[in-house]
Length: 402
Image (tube, helix red, strand yellow):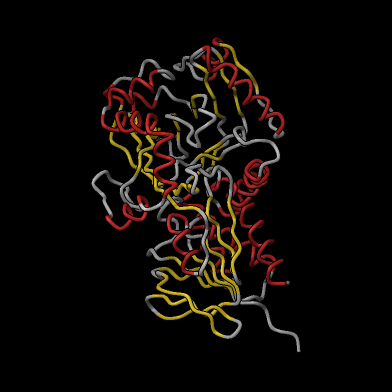
């Protein structure tokens, strides 16, 4: 007698976990499938605090997992939004060089974009002003395929689609423990147990801890970085038509302070990227001694700090000094004023750091006994989530078949 469909549990109800569930349901329509989310609703952390950009794939090295999954994922995300009534806008993006030293890096971005199949355009100063009349720069790269969406709305639409397909999406289910029983894994939650033949860990900010609960040494530690934003006033927002970005530092996984007109019409400015004192530290005063001790005990943290302390010090200065933040914004839009900056929200990025202090910059998957762990899902993870979900489902399917 052949065994029945394999039972699969996904830990984490962010956009990557939900997209993985959709892909698994598509590949195994009859398999018992459960999503466990510790919060009272899906998409409460990185997904719900996302800036909402639909990335085209300009920044990623050709052939990398990021480049491949971003292109596929953006197309799938637009199709999903169209099918489920989630509004999105393909508004385009400008990456603006404001200094001579940035021009070679802008050309490198153009070459990457072309290699990744994008139809980009280089604009001179006058052409830049035609697209964004209030922006300033020597040259800009225009990326028409970029857009915006509300990923919180996407996550809720994914949840509704999963429930309609018979998937159990269980919120308020914090994982307390894992044990093996015969050929199954038993996940102990605060409200009971879930038996599963295979587990996918999409735990985001807690993914490394969850991997250790499964007996793995993931080789990395999640270090949380808080991204702090301002909203622009109505007068300031009128100076931004779509997305205006600086040329990023190629050594850093952060894109620098930029301007984003969201799908609902508001304009965000930011982020600062500062070390958060808690894994869910959305405010400066949020502090978790346990989270800090765990980070400080990891040798990779100090190696990272030794390499990037000057950058970190500047980010903290800019976090504490709105005038410095405004100065960086004025490189892109000189007419912005202090009155244009209104207090905004923040997000926390789950940055994987290895023992040598290197910041993981691509998607990172680690296999365990009857489990698969997503240990780094940086930007463009939200854009690429539906493609990432299919990649995870493929890997999980191969493991279960073997």
